[in-house]
Amino acid sequence: MDIEVRASELDDKKADMLILDVRGEIAYRHGHLPGAVLQSGEISVVEMNDLLQEYGKRKVLFYCNVGEKSMELAGEMRNAGIEAYSLKGGFRAWLLEAPELLSAEEAERYSRQILLPEIGKSGQEKLKNAKVLVIGAGALGSAALTYLALAGVGTIGIADGDRLELSNMHRQILYKTDSIGRNKALLAKKRLEVMNPDVRIIMHDYFVTPDNIMECIQDYDFIVDGTDRIETKFLINDACVLLRKAFCHAGILRFEGQVMTWTRPEHACYRCVFEDVPEEYIPNCSEAGIVGAVAGVIGSVQALEAIKYITGTGELLVGKIFTFDALTMKSRIVPVSEKNKACKVCGTQPSIVDVRQAEELYRLRGCGNE
Image 1 (cartoon, rainbow, N blue to C red):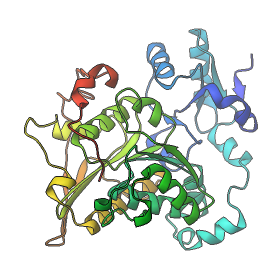
Image 2 (image 1 turned 30 degrees about the vertical axis):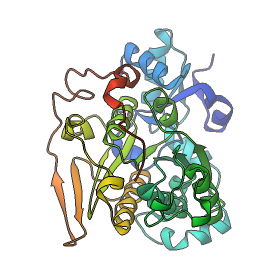
Image 3 (image 1 turned 180 degrees about the vertical axis):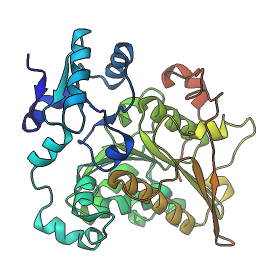
Image 4 (image 1 turned 90 degrees about the vertical axis):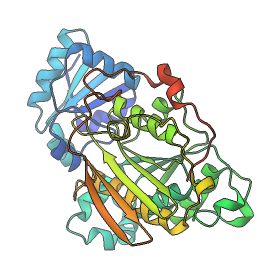
């Protein structure tokens, strides 16, 4: 069995294959194979088997810059009985063999974005290759989905089981009044496809739960949390940390909003900062109120975080929280200097290793999204 796989053979082989990028995070952020998972540190056979189980895959493909490190890793895993492969020639070979990704129409559509040296043609191609999931198609989700689709993110997932209500209309910009009572995920899908027919929209017309979230997020590169309930925010955080999925959290209430991003285990996650669902009840937007434009500002910031992550440009809100007060128009960055060693999901002795086994932590008082 040949241990090396050529870039031209990937489409026929990767259906049941976990693709691991064994370069560094900076290289990964500047470009990676579609669906690849970053694994820049050492990995044991036990950890490799755990990863394959997490992602529901039978085989693993390693790739580095030119193919040397990945060959060594693939050989080690094969010696341990794991079906492992190395990408021949590494990422550089894949770049050389990759077809022209942007059509003439796409190049024109995104021309103002491509003009930016921080994005350029290569960045636009990364966006086209990317997969972003937005959980919650309400106010935050409406803004984030709109700008992700218009930016040319190739595959966008929408996870939401809610139906449109009249009280949503002042802030959820994707919808029209004559659609009240219909499923938001379906409505959002149809609207986005009209906005940008080149973007593939995947609909998950259900609320995320401990039983379905791991399967829901596993094929995406970046997750946007557009939910309202604090219990669901902890669920999204924990699932993303366990699957090592980069994600962006946001919360809005009244005239205020906040955003933070997580990309890798070295940084503080949402649970590191907020620890647990508070004992006292936390009102959501339907109870405490929200100015619609605040959702537009914060949802747009989330879209920007996704775009920056995919294109590998700019500085992400990692290890920090962006806060915005619309009444005073003041914003600030609050640093989160280090991880919480007692964090239940990413601390030194985590107690959450499977969200399905910790279901009571995420039990909702109700359902909704901003």
